[in-house]
Length: 375
Image (cartoon, rainbow, N blue to C red; front, side):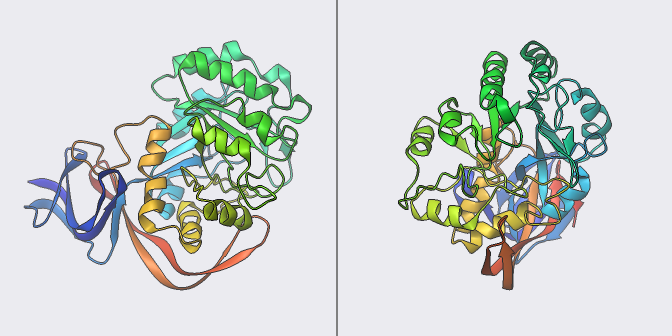
């Protein structure tokens, strides 16, 4: 007997090439079977008319709630956004990761995997009324300490995070990227790089990134946008994709523009991953959550199966997690149940541009570890 069966939903699992009405069964915390007319279960849920996907993964969140000024409550956020895994994008650094682990990660029900910030203190001064770039002070960028802690926390940390730009690294420019990259190289981890307004330039930063490294905020508005003035894609952006750099949305409060996204999509350059960059000042808008960010791409004409791909298997691969991102039997028993709401929805980017969309995703339920968790 199965522990749980979701019956009659439209299963969308791009990793397996599945888009069909199927039952999904779970047992012992894992996906047990996909098919029609699956047998008895301790708990059955009729999800006919809903979309069943692998558990959604938000690659860029800030959920060190109570330990940083920008953190949001992880379980509350996951339940509203349909997520089963939250990747924290460097809220904690080598000096604060231990508190994040003990007081938030280990006490939360949703799965949380952190990037380790190259800055010793992590993101410590981010608020409506206070903004301090943690990579503006070279004294906080100690590669020896960061590498040691990354190795100590090897079963938890999924990458190294660095933030650069006029607001986050100031006069140090791209130097923090070079420091963080050396740590990532020696730790055998990917690097996620935030880039805001210049300096440094996008081209200078992208030139440093390796295959498997991540540029977040990849569809940001001008300046440092990837969209070229001639209507194409900047050459350094094309070169980075060709060598395997991963492009992640990271919507946030200031890092996603419809004009940029529209041009990139028209040029055949979709993002690899769609993420929210949810934090204190973006959760109330314009990002709101992962589902709102996904809905914006639906509104731009990206097909549902591609939107799901970018928030499941692509996100899992970006952090080298082979145990999730698909409903393949034997993997983690995580799933998200969605509805595609039909109506007239006004969606807003970070510069105030709006689009009208006829559909929007909403969470109807979450399976976490093979058990019905929320909905």
